[in-house]
Image 1 (tube, rainbow, N blue to C red):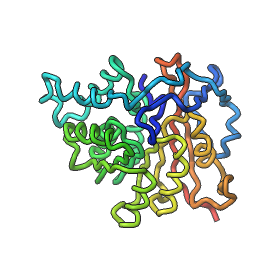
Image 2: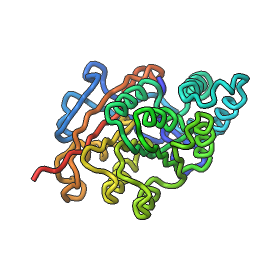
Image 3: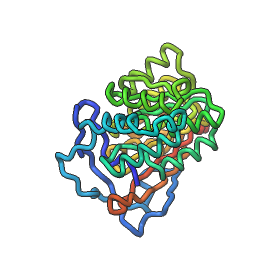
Length: 295
């Protein structure tokens, strides 16, 4: 029901419906699709540049709703029952998003699938690109901790969103496990790799500016932050801005944009979700596991 339907433009103080939506035609979409070949070979999935009717000037974030969410939660008369209770805080965020103003959160359906992957992968380190109000950091950070992991890192461009996230993460009792870092994902990844303060990433969640998915994945690759066995999870495959990323992880050993050999191959599976509140248009999450290049 909840989804990051429209991403926040990181360079703007207000966020607008400025991405193109690709919607699967009903009847042609399996609930789960997978591929180990190129993006173009997915003939069973037909894409068209259509989607929910969203006004060009419709605001989706950065209008005070994030601070309003925080004020709502911290002002609840039963606040003490939420302390050190990640699941309860997740429920409060979902309820506020549903009844007040939509928030750009992964939501329970996609969240449940990602938690299942965390339980299967048992990562020591999980890093997310795009933290927003802390929903994913709380949900997935708690899952990584329960699975025996060492740390969860949330990279968020906006100081304002990072502040909201940090306060909710503290309320959830995850401050000692979840670290929030402010800045561009590319600079943060490269900086931590240079300082050797970031170990190899077991799960990388890509859920920030859609046009940067592939660029920032390549930053992680170039800086030695990924390895065979690492899992890359990308939300919001509905947006055409993610097409180059999708072609890359679903493609062959050669990067079609540069002609160069990739450092890794990916076994990629796309899981599609029908979003009820948007007339059942389809959004996808890509699960891409790194495998060694064959000699």
